[in-house]
Structures are given as C-alpha cells and as structure tokens.
Length: 128
Figure (cartoon, rainbow, N blue to C red):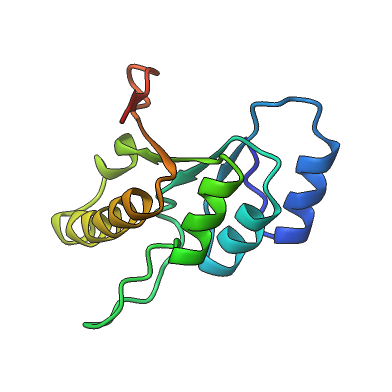
C-alpha cells in the first residue's frame, strides 16, 4: 500500500514496484486525480479521514470528480471504500463522510468504474 502524499513520488513508487496489485490511499483532490490519470495500479482506497476537505452547501469535496471517475473506468482502477474507517468517528463526522460516500457512489455508477467495499475485520471485499 502506498501512502505517499506527494503525487510525483507516488508515481515513482508505482513505476518502481514489481507487484501488479498496488493499492494507494487517497489524499487530496489534486493527488487523486493525478494518480488516477497516471494509472498503472489496481486500487485507490477511500476515505482518508486524516485529510480535511472543504464542504459548502453547493459542493462536497469527496476527493473524486467526474474526470477522475472516467479515468478510473478507462484505466481499470478499482475504487474501494473502507467501511471500518467510519467506526471511530463522531456522529457529525460520520454524516459528512457518508455524504462523500454517496457522492463517490453516484460518480462511480455514472461512469461505470469498478467499486468495492472493504471491511478490515473480515478482510473480504463486498463488490458490486
């Protein structure tokens, strides 16, 4: 799993990796878009609760936009959502993360990208 917050360093790590099953932890919007457009890895994992994102009445910054979702579908990248990350949050933070989750689901379904749920306790993904 790559947790590097710098997009260019993450690309270098992907390039130098010998494994075909590379997972990347999502960061901010610009990082996610740059890495997804680069491709050459299998999975990007949402949410990263350590990253604070903007939230207004008109915009929810989920870390994924329509261009990134389309690129993920083209590059055959699976967008994974780790449900276990939500367990330790307060009610308000859970509501905000669920808002982002719904936004990601809408984008993934619209652009026909691959999506799966990850649950850290069972280690078995639930895909649809």
